[in-house]
Length: 193
Ligand SMILES: Nc1nc2c(ncn2[C@@H]2O[C@H](COP(=O)(O)OP(=O)(O)OP(=O)(O)O)[C@@H](O)[C@H]2O)c(=O)[nH]1
Ligand SMILES: [Mg+2]
Image 1 (cartoon, rainbow, N blue to C red):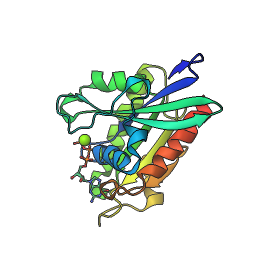
Image 2: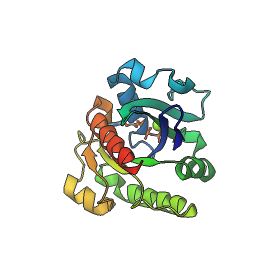
Image 3: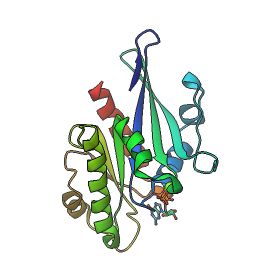
Image 4: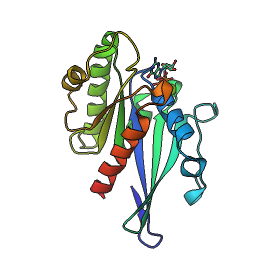
């Protein structure tokens, strides 16, 4: 987190984690399309939004104004590396500096093991900087709830094992649920201030 007491402003950073095709990009696009342009693309502190459609960027990056809390202007920057930029060093940089994490889980039974293995990688990356998923703001999106071969919510919750993290059913491709997840993350980040 970057904080300026003089400017009364704080900038949080969060990573979007999830296996290939889980719905990370759709989540970011869902946020951009549902939030007013001044919330996601404003020039606050000089940042502009860059989405995956900008192929020159190696990160997907979306800034979101979270509004004011106790007179402090809050900003959230969401990051996810492009598919060809997922060397563990890139992830390590993103994750080690993250104030929070959105875990996007592909709810399909056929991808359960991949989701679990991939979360283990996240835990290892965090452990590198003496951090743990249990101690930082994390929200979970159980995505692709519209598909036939999905695990029930409670079963996924148990198997994914992030029980302290608020979990939401999402259909990112239809922009459903992604705002709930970001609101929950906002709440956790403010609590961590
Ligand atoms: N049916 C369905 N399809 C989805 C959903 N979310 C994403 N998809 C589709 O799944 C595919 C992958 O979604 P992306 O958002 O690109 O996934 P990603 O996590 O960014 O994937 P990578 O960047 O390749 O790791 C796309 O074809 C999406 O349209 C969902 O909730 N339901
Ligand atoms: Mg993507």
